[in-house]
Image (cartoon, rainbow, N blue to C red):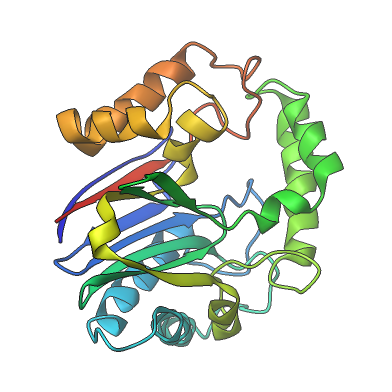
Length: 268
């Protein structure tokens, strides 16, 4: 498997995405925004995703190991790396996870939260994503979207949403993300696809997939055309050009004017 990667921050703050590609593996992590709220951890989200990503790549070097087991092991190891932090804090650093692995003529996938994997196959495009987060707290999400970005009203509404999300995050009543407990790995969506049915694949953070899913300014066919011609960097530039036409979120209400954006483009 040949993997081409690119990640770019969405603004002045440190990039909270993380990406890696090997001959058998593509991993994208998207750190969850803290909205300026406390987390109980002195390290921060960029440190967390870097630690988790490194442990994931090591854990999944064994091709016979189930992806969910590798994720559980990585979560446990990251938690052990900072026992001095309050890992019981509901705001402890966390991330979405998307993994694609080539193994013995098949592609294994794992997604936890809303970073999608898109397979370009003989019968079109298959989108693999975990959208359980969209099913909770719709009223608070709508309140955030009523405000222009970079306003005090937007910031306050976003903090109320994040505080409420933290109360249902990694519970049966809410949705699941990678955080401190290895239990979350067992709630990821996993599956296997025959390689002969797939031409290429893209593992994305939602800062990129929104070009299709939220902005409606491209199709998945357009995305793969761009990836073939200009690679991941050109795809992210396409997202930025669209966002530059709506910096205040009037046309496309969102949490940030520009989110961190990450792509792992896989070919074989």
